[in-house]
Image (cartoon, rainbow, N blue to C red):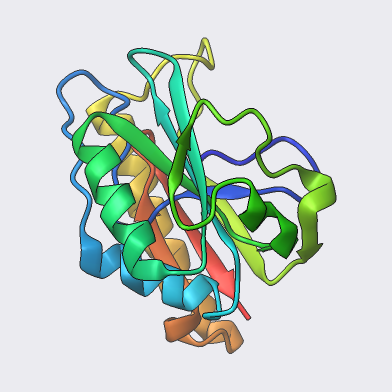
Amino acid sequence: MIVARNEKLQSVVTPGARGCQNADTKAIADPKEIRRGLTLLHPKSDIVELRAINNNTSYNATGYFTNFELYITEAVRLNSQGFTIYSIVNELNPNLLNLASNKIAPGLKNTAKDKHVIRRRCLPIDIDPEREPKDISSTDMEHQSALEMMYKISRWLPTFGIPEESIALADSGNGGHFTIAD
């Protein structure tokens, strides 16, 4: 998971879309898992940002969606073209919808920032291996180890009363992450 290094604005790789971090890894977006993640993280009235980054070209595309089916269609399409898909997990200012309403705007400069978060509703937890230098992708073994830790922690959380259905798991390409939703 990519977690912005700031206080409020946190994003997750869309569940079901594994990032292409390693050259031998092909991203595969699963519409069913994306739908499940969106439903868990966002009530139907939410504005959801889809941020797509192509690691090979540094080309970005962004859109704001209230229609989950359009979001899923765009996420799958962009993912099949080599983009890694990210989504903000917290509630955003509905005015962002005016930038790109239920569609993708290539190269959009005005993307969601901390000031656009109007309510926190999720706790994202990122599990990545330590590596040096930090800007390199994890090896397959490091990636698998991080995923095993993610599964171990996610099975441990219900012992503290956290309902299993409030936990969304995802593969970030370098490790894993999960989000606990309210």
